[in-house]
Image 1 (spheres, helix red, strand yellow):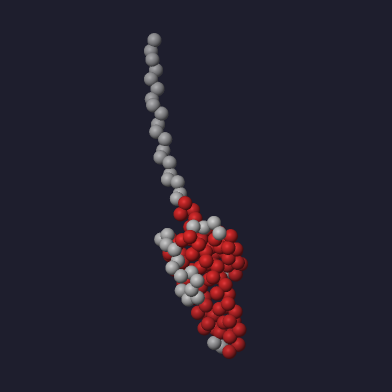
Image 2 (image 1 turned 180 degrees about the vertical axis):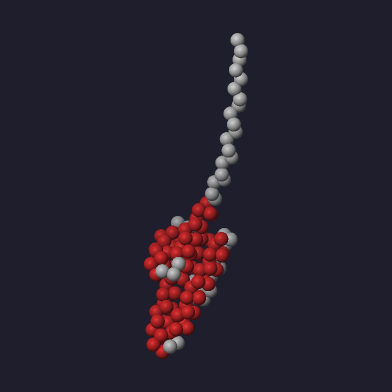
Amino acid sequence: MTETITPPPAPAPPLAPAPTAAADDRQMAMVIYILYLVPAGITHIVGLILAYVSRESAPPWLKTHYTLQIRTFWIGLLYFVIACALVIVIIGIPLLLAVCVWFVIRCAIGLSRLSRGEAYPAPESWLL
């Protein structure tokens, strides 16, 4: 009688590394920064709500980003309302542009620090 030899099974492909907890935590903050950078008012409100909800369960370094995002929304809204009121005396037009630039730069710096895994140094600041 002849024996049949079966080849050994092929090795299983290597598993992809599991995402780290830090990368998972950062995703929501990154989504919020992106929502803030989209030039539509409703996305800012959605980002604000997500920041409030996510801040409670975040690690301390990430809470600085959520605090920054929340304060960026409210301070930006205040600056925007003041600039709109000053449009009557013409000075509000360049102030509106300055508010938009401030908002984008603040989000870009936060996004940059988030991608490097760094806490935001002064999230309570009114400037950058």
